[in-house]
Length: 173
Length: 173
Image 1 (cartoon, chains in turn orange, green):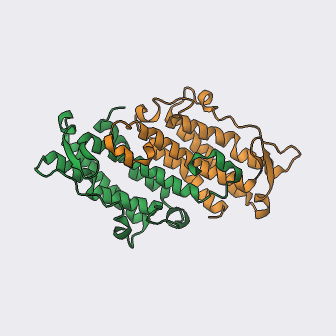
Image 2 (spheres, one colour; image 1 turned 135 degrees about the vertical axis):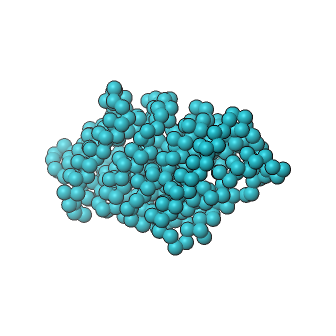
Image 3 (cartoon, rainbow over the protein chains, first blue to last red; image 1 turned 60 degrees about the vertical axis):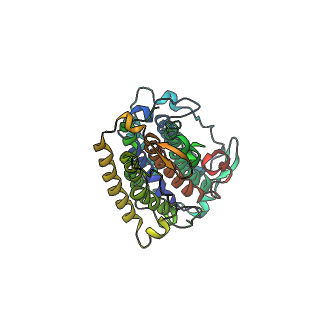
């Protein structure tokens, strides 16, 4: 499947609603407890997604589109949420994420990017040359990746409870 | 985390809504195309979840609770959906799943199961002796496992589009 703005936006606009439906009203035993810098809870993941909306995807797209002299991305802080989310409820984070995502998608759609623009490049500090098309594709897969991470975290809570069925459940391998 | 009916129901009641939010309005390129018996699309997964509501979890729980003479489960048909879903839209399947799940959860909650009942056993044709607690725990993890499968299927659509970022995206490994 080839990248297109239309197909990317289909996924990107659902993610905040999907996460709200998935997590809203769950007890903290599912969404928060047992999370750490090495093993993010759903709460930590939502904080990470917020930080991405603020500093990663659209900010990097803007840098590429501006085609200025310095087109090397700032390194991205993968652990920023452990400070930034402090004192906030999961519900507050989910609302914040939905607002930021919605504003970013408005911007993206308004740009009406051409194929030529999608081929523009910048330099990733570790990965080297990347295109705008690759950034936007990665934004989509990054959403799905973190939904995956959330369900894996929750499934492991019952790792011992499923008994022999564990061998049939890929999510627990 | 120990199994409890309350914590299990928290997840089980969200799943139909989570899937509706995640899949509703997506084009078939995301939800249907490229699916096969070996690589289920989101459409195939929802059909599988429906079959589970009809023949697996609650039916097996009822067999255990009845404590009849023959307490060996019928083997479960993992591919039933490839016949059963024929001609139905994803939207129809999502609605059907939500109705079946809701009726099954009503039944589960009405039972007010005791710890002694949760320890009752039956025989799984491949796994041997299993408890009711394990069946119900597996029902929860099975939901999460299939949400995981759906996001993996969709993420792979952009496998080639993300370029060098692939190495950072666990979902594409």
